[in-house]
Length: 298
Image 1 (cartoon, rainbow, N blue to C red):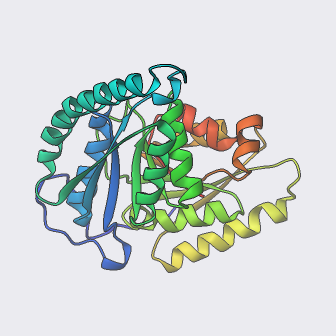
Image 2 (cartoon, rainbow, N blue to C red):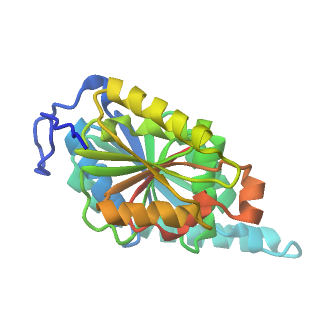
């Protein structure tokens, strides 16, 4: 496979001169923070983007206050006020830790704090996402509120998200990228959102997984069209067609492991969110299992 070597490669040193093409840069991002140790991988990727692209970083501190569990009855208002006060006080402690971490990113960083119930935090994340190029979030695992926030960013805001797993402790400018290809609007939007990364990568693999209802012609022709489109952007790609797997997400993750990918690009929520919740799907499987960052868009 031919590869594209860019002159603007990133060495990882802080304060490095910026040479990324203006048309393919990430101007601003929000990074979700909660004051825990899980903030570190997300902040590392935000710092990497700031170094490469001069990206403005907005820390989004979502402080949950679980008032929805207060039983309605005598003393409700007093109990609710106490819970809010305790939640805000806990948030103040977390905010101090967050601000000390954000200081590492320098002056080009701001912090936005929102206190509220989980659904309010998801709404606030979606509203912020509509005004930025990218949102960095953690892999949800068993955190339902974080899963709802990811869904709000992708589905309600229609914004791309970079999902960083906790084990991604070292932020890397991804030089090997796997694009999970499917002939869908969601996939096309994800590829468009990933262009700043694809332009810098040394290897890009456009990987499709066979579907039971797809003929070989229907399966391969759109992939070839996308490969030509990316070539016009100066991105050399290798197209790979995989046989049918029971779980397509496993096929993509296996291929990413084989080629040593540092980023996986995929469309999100090809079905409606309700059907995805009931039936499962590639989105849920990737969010549950990917050991490398995911760039997704709906």
